[in-house]
Length: 292
Image 1 (tube, helix red, strand yellow):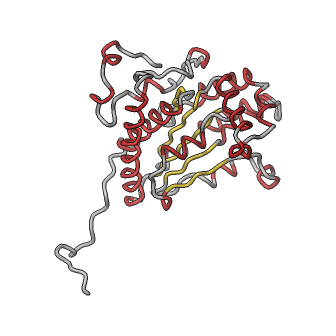
Image 2 (image 1 turned 90 degrees about the vertical axis):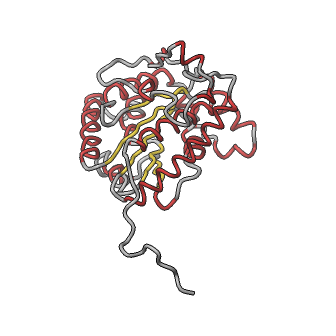
Image 3 (image 1 turned 45 degrees about the horizontal axis):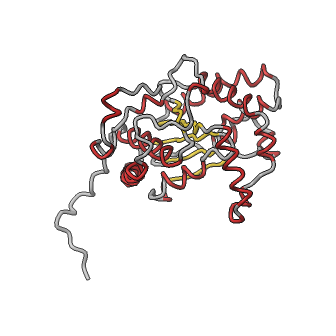
């Protein structure tokens, strides 16, 4: 990941195309390869000069407008289904990413599904039961804010189920996602990678700013004590479930502007790859004039 050639470092941001300025495979977790999150700097901005934030924000705005067009195509065509999975530590930027990257999309064709602590009803079923109900239908783009991956993350770290049980879930998840792919769903999974220091600053900001107090959850401090365990759990979950058709992308996310830029680029390239077209117009409308 993040193999940047010297020529790319010299390329000015405004000299690059609106999208395709970077190969998104550079952020992709390779199937079957070990993932060392400690080797990926959450503060880094691969392929982009960190001093040129303004150009990155300008590029993100252009990408967001392209996402608007592509999402309208997705909804109009009504054939493809797109699932975006966002995972991160607490305060990792999932909500902010959704707010900024998808700000122009049509709510008619986009849903956000948030997966919090399971209800009693959900606990009475298998762990994928509540997830399967939220996957996209034809024409929909669905964003999972947290997801089925909580069942190989928090349950592992807090020892909520035996290891023999959660380890089997890697295979379940691969098979579940392959089922979705086989039925026509395009899956993009994104891990927003922040540092422990950045999380501390963001949590402190929630305490220091009254308008953000509502976002502070004392339980986040409990989870923070297990940081190393969570990093190990995320790394193994990504290793075990990043496949050719349901890839994981690891995005350095300390700098919110860079996070938004890369996530937007991943989505645009993925949606462009679907090669969608608007459906044909109804017959005999050429020259039609709506009467007064």
